Length: 362
View 1: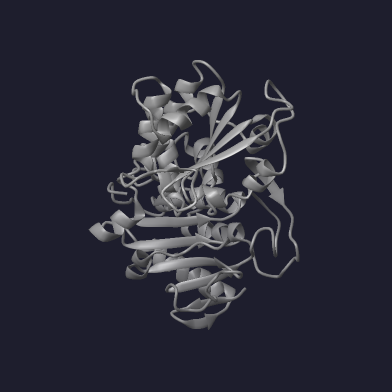
View 2: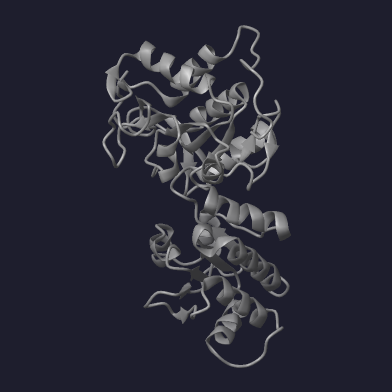
């Protein structure tokens, strides 16, 4: 094992002991980042329960934009495979979605299934950046989506670019609305899903949210089957409580509520500024953008990178599902799940109960 304690190289036992001591002494620890394989995510939830900690993924901003829209009004979504196989019109919303890898597949083919089979495929864009087919305008992308929805539903009359775009969406046989939730935000995602519902009164249209690069979609599924709730949960009272505001790790750190952190990033995941203000343990993949050193946390433990040095179940954007990714070149570093399991063993008495009561603010 490659590890550092207070900037000094340490062996495996010393690093695990130091990490366990740091977390054991915390009253309101947070486990954040969560850019990791499914086995590590499951281990993180088990450790959070033992610690009475809260969890907050780095993917939360985009993830909660979609979860908020789903909770507010539901969603009509499709998958990448269905979009490639059925869509005769694809509307790319925002600058972030304009670089989506799926666009190459969509541009290189036409619909082969359903009502639109054999028809040409049209790709259009609505964004604030230059080169878009339709300009979002100074009010921004969420406002433009709201206006587009009003035109498509017949609640707004008149001519103009958005009225033209709405007419093209209504005329499509199977329209796909491709977007990045982190860019549209909660309001834009809600408006966009409402647009899909309105279009389905007369034709077929579906939203296709892009997955984030930090395993947010996998985290959402692990959280759902583990706690029946979203990923921002706290175990401070011995059971999982979901609250997107209360368990926002950045907010907890700024408010002085959190007093220790475990940063889990076996996959590249940008570490936030608030992390340096807390006593912390970091589990970092060897392929981080920054080199793994002793300065990122009080205790740093290098772990294997899923899909590179070890196999792991990861979110597969093209399949829109969790899939196994074998190791490209097996290495000697331990998995994040193994390290988290070792920490759990150090922090949990024989009967499997938390080591101490935690603050209810967790």
